[in-house]
Length: 227
Ligand SMILES: C[S@@+](CC[C@H](N)C(=O)[O-])C[C@H]1O[C@@H](n2cnc3c(N)ncnc32)[C@H](O)[C@@H]1O
Image (cartoon, rainbow, N blue to C red; front, side, top):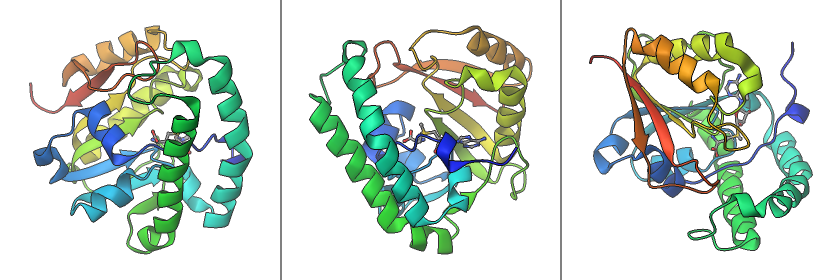
């Protein structure tokens, strides 16, 4: 089925949030990093400006800047309305209000949009849809990240997750996924079965993070080669 932008809710985070979600150290930030489903996050732009090496993969990178900007405009009101209705499910310590949240997200997405043309030309934003094969050799990247995509959209199912993570683990020495709860911040059977599968051949850890926005979403999954 063709990937439609109208089915995506583009909502982007920044480098500081990525650092906290994935416990990325200065040392990690010097490594070769792949971001899967990075969408309109400013992570790639900020890390590149910081001197890092990062490639982001997302199906939305098949679209133009204008298309993505238009879609962000369409979902902005809808997402903020949902946030308002569900605000008690969030921790308002670091981000203190809905206004602050909207400003933070819009600023990250605008930074992405300003960088999109340049980043695409430099091969930093690559059109790719998991679980398709990636155009990179085995172990090309040190760390692969997935923020607010894998394990959250449980409807994608077990097979999708196994294939997607297997392909990520082919090109990355280690992968990190945040959060490990679903869209309602509930722990899921999917997470347990995915962990069970990868434990057979990989080192699997659940690690506390420095990030909690949706109540209970303060853990990430790390899967790496070598035990
Ligand atoms: C909620 S956004 C998260 C954006 C970013 N990672 C962040 O946390 O700021 C989810 C992203 O997953 C992307 N996505 C959807 N299906 C995908 C697939 N099959 N493979 C890779 N990315 C996908 C969407 O296009 C969207 O950009």
